[in-house]
Amino acid sequence: MIGDDVEWGEAIGLVQTLAADPSSYIAASVSGWDYPITYEAAAVMNLFDLMHDIAWQQGGRKGSRPRPHPRPWRDRAKSRPKPTISQDEVVAALMAAGHPPPKGYELN
Image (cartoon, rainbow, N blue to C red; front, top):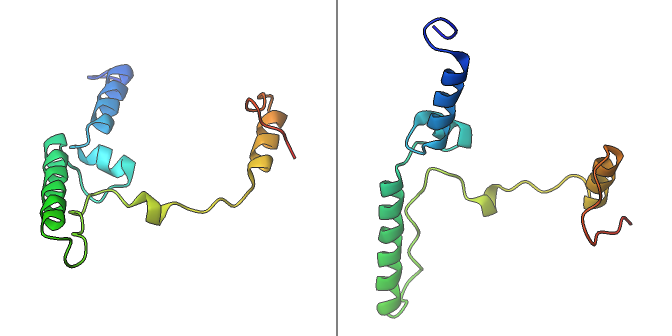
């Protein structure tokens, strides 16, 4: 029980450790991944993709380029949302909250 058997600080530290480990379901969930993955599995996937790409290049680039092995995370290029407000509005809101403007930035 947290607070009795385990102190809150220790429990928070353990959860932070799990959230930083990509092979844990907690890290996968926090990151929005489909499943957890170890560093070794990610390295093997990268080698797999590299070998297929090299074979395709040495084979005269016939056919379509090999597709990479699916990763648990979403493709950022496909899933990045479009901004709904301008950069000027963001800077103005930050300045209204007391933050200095970015260096070299002029508010329009």
